Image (tube, rainbow, N blue to C red; front, side, top):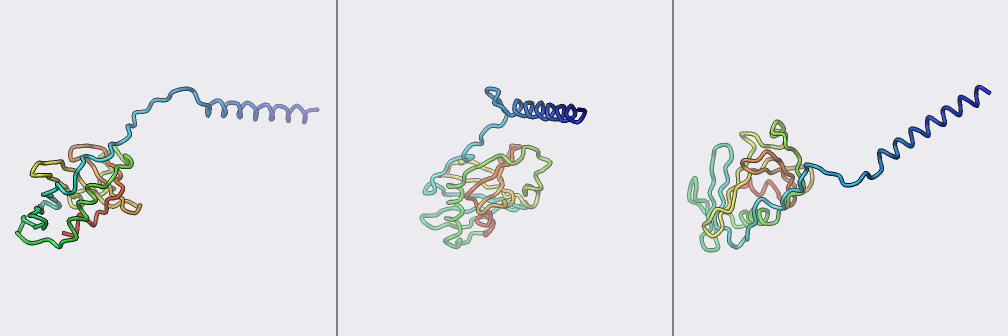
Length: 170
């Protein structure tokens, strides 16, 4: 008789636990969150209108200027640029998409490549007018993914369709 009582109590206990789990997992109405879906891009560009791109890394600045249909390196020296490098970079600037926020904690910035030596600052001009700037960290795990952030922002984003090597070849 004692075994039947013991079994009954165990089964009742399991039933209570299952009911609690079911209640906790049920939909309890509208939920709120502080997470905002990231913007698609920091700024939009028209690749045909891009006429100047500045790249800053390790305190050194490289300026690329479009002259007619050709691109030239104008800073630190004046020199023609290999023809296929700049279009690939401009294509990444036009086609990248921000897929998610990966961190809002600036203590993690080195992990994502935002250090004094690893960060590349990109500044883009269209038709002679500043379009915007942002920072590129290191490449991410996925194919054609890179970590990026606004110059003054705390959020670090994952960008799809951006290959960091297209910005480091020059």
